[in-house]
Image (cartoon, rainbow, N blue to C red):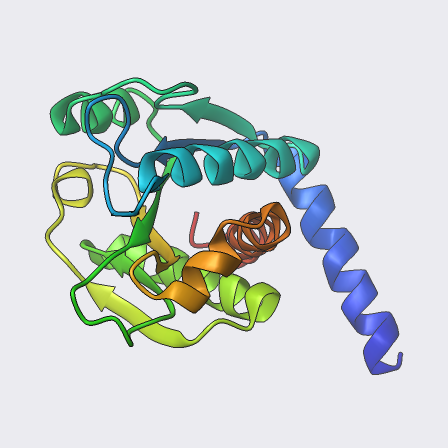
Length: 199
């Protein structure tokens, strides 16, 4: 079997695995409502995160996964409630979608955060998926103590899809095609994590 045929076989097997598993992914669009998150002018993180989360939900469902959206509109959801909702679904995984911002205007790229050891494999898989699909600068996979990660009993990660404070990256993030690539990359990571047997 040549490399191309082997890659197709792995992809088909992974897709079948997800369809048969019916596993659940909790999707957390960061911020919302009165909490706009990072922003550049009138470009608000809360809107971009929700759009990306909805794209993520669409592609996960196409792969056969069940999904639970923490929010599916411009609503404020407290951090404690986000974690509590997720913890109602034993055996699920949790993905929180964000975009970054900093006073350092030159900083750009994607990064992924995890807290527990059980979450590191998911973080690596989804981070690599985002990099492959977007070709964004790589800011790495990092340990963090974010509330929604610390208070989650599930494998849980928080992805940052780019910096709104970087004018060039913000222009990319504003394009639906980029957010679509980002969502597809996260899905690729979920499928790889599922196929690895860590879930």
